[in-house]
Length: 125
Image (cartoon, rainbow, N blue to C red):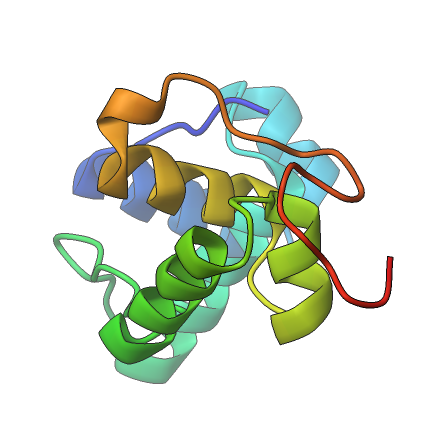
């Protein structure tokens, strides 16, 4: 799904119209042509909390710490370079996240093994 970024003025206009229309999401979206339903509700919730909207969005803190990332990449490297094996052993992160970490850590590798049991020697395989 595409991620849209709206200027402060656009978000304020949407919130004001939403309130004017009796907090009817569909009526607001139909008239403006934006935003998505959940975005509208989130903007309104922020507006009610602060009586204003943030000028800029606040970046989300990373889901995984640097230590967790290091442990996952080290496990991948030391246990046969297999994504599936690392995910199963650690229980985190998701496949796409771990693959991105591995590609960043080992750019020379080219491809990443995602087979259930990669080329390494796995004792319970």
